[in-house]
Amino acid sequence: MTPLKKNLDADEERVTRAHRLLIGLGAALVHHPFDVATHERLRAFLSDDAETVLMSLRVLEQRPEAELRKRIAELSGHHLLPLGGTA
Image (tube, rainbow, N blue to C red; front, side, top):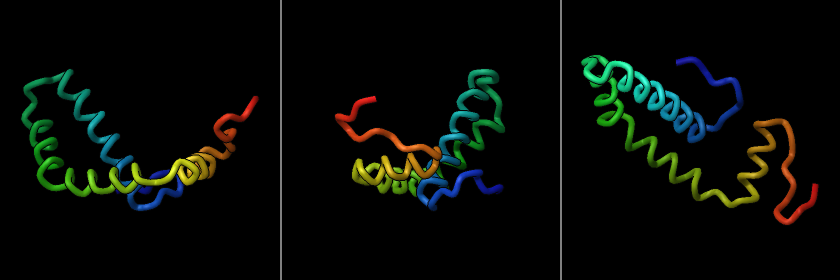
């Protein structure tokens, strides 16, 4: 596995990798709906990794809004206006 470009924590990286994998598998299934290898990769993800990814997703979803905004700013290199702020 190659590291992602941004400095993600373990939960962020796990969810991001799973998101990319599932998007790719979904596209592969649309393009070749009966491809055995694609089905096997999806089955492997569901049996081996899905539970851990869902736990990481729950951790991320529990972060307070202020922490999420700070993290978005760190990763994107800019700061968002606070709620109720003006442009």
